[in-house]
Length: 338
Ligand code: KG4
Ligand code: ZN
Image 1 (tube, rainbow, N blue to C red):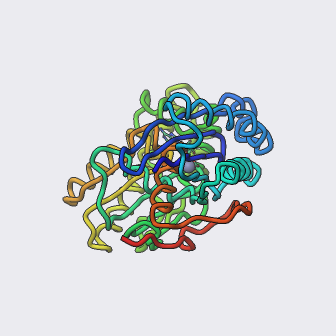
Image 2: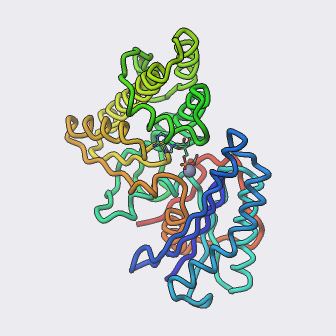
């Protein structure tokens, strides 16, 4: 079956078509980054309006490029949360209107489940069970995954998400939005000479806290001469601290669960330093590590089409009433048997 996937939870309009046997057929992404950059962060109302402008043309283009007709599509998957309410509503209303007019089922997809399953789109996908580290702009989660919808939360951030810490620190360094990739580019020219804390690694447990790193960065910036080199060194030191902290917690999660597969996904998993540090840790632990390709680390329609296809194939579907949840715990998802 061909499934159309729609992602509109934040600042990217993503559309994709996934086929249950052939795999990913096509995916398109329209990023609103340039528009929000002017304001230093995502402006929710502007995000919703831009999704309205871009979503339907993107769906048409995706079908055309795939040489598929509307009638070839057997199901529609859309991101129903978590995310910005207005942005989610655009995706939900569009998906459900199309499902009604095409007389096909629709399925609400959890954005973080989309991220978690993104490595399944790669040539060598992980088998269940595994530990998943999900690091995005809004969430930092460590999850024990036994199957689709079988998620046990091992740890989460008690304050800022990893991506949020990157974005806020980047802003303090005078870099634009989104800060993660910009900070990481600046860190290339820096030396990690400043010893940032590794928050919550000196006590047991798998929770995270990143807001202290941001404060530490601010104090360090204020105490420095604010030269270009100082800023690059601060960026490199901050990035090392996040990478180290994530590696320490993932190592602990692998040891605690006895599992030997680690999946890392979400926007921050595009960070090369973090990827390298986690790979090194996994090798030492004799664990296999899996990442999505770089373009599927950040938000995209392909992961939503994939997750929705698995649930639709298992016979799940929703009614035509709009379902959108800005907050939606992963633990509330239903299991997919198999
Ligand atoms: O998963 P995502 O695209 O959207 C959310 O679900 O939030 O993640 C976006 C986050 C932003 O905070 C962005 O700064 C961060 O991922 N990010 C990065 C990198 N690329 C994106 N952080 C660090 N290094 C990167 N290369
Ligand atoms: Zn995301």
